[in-house]
Image (cartoon, rainbow, N blue to C red; front, top):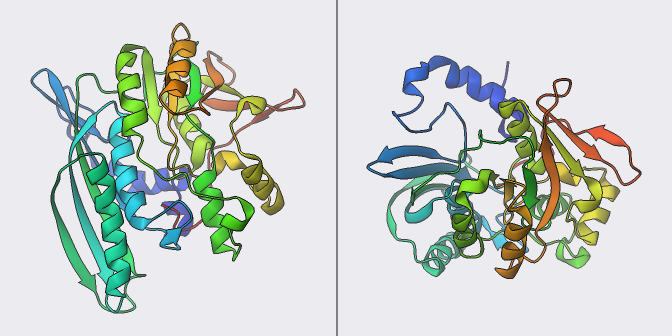
Length: 342
């Protein structure tokens, strides 16, 4: 078997490769620390209990083509993605480290713009940059720049994505598929901004974490739907908890421009990456109140899009009720829709 782009797309092929290369080689006792969470769960980060709090650590490598796009660039993408992975676990970021690998011959002004963009995001969020690394690869051995970023945060009660339960409501905090549609358009030579396409790339620390913290005991899962989009997140939740997740097509927040683009190119927006949206599973008794507080915090397009149900016949399945009233199964991502997206 050879590695393909599909193995890096965040879907089922990625999970298969992780299982073969890493997870199958690790004994269960070494996949996490005592009272912690690690590769036994495959959440947005790892949790290590220290005293009465949890140290949350996340690491990710970022690569996108093109490096600059409407709404952001590789630097903003890397900083925002790292912050959002910590927020997704209910952690307040306390430090970031970054590593840049640069291809020989790359314009230093281009690199400076990307580095400045990365720094600007963490400065705006008042997060210290405490370390990192820099490497240069010979010309032709790398396509411009890769950024790897490590985020460190503290959580009193981390949000682990295996606590989903029947009755929970599913909330998305903004319009979906914005980033994926924008990058796909650019890669096909389409002037994205001319057609109203713009990445939603941004950190969600300020509009989200304080609101979430007030309802932390009622939130049973939270994830930013990046590679594989909303469809992949919901499928992983349903599979890992043995539940059925039902979503409603008429409740999905999708901007008209994004919907039209997806129809033209024949892509389901449920599978396209978001870089400034969070998916939340929350107890039904506080879902409406949480939704209103999210909107008041600046997430005006937040919406309840579905719910978690118990079903022996359809355990581990995601189902969408369509605009016509029918039902369709939303499969997990099995291929690669957009290469080098985040």
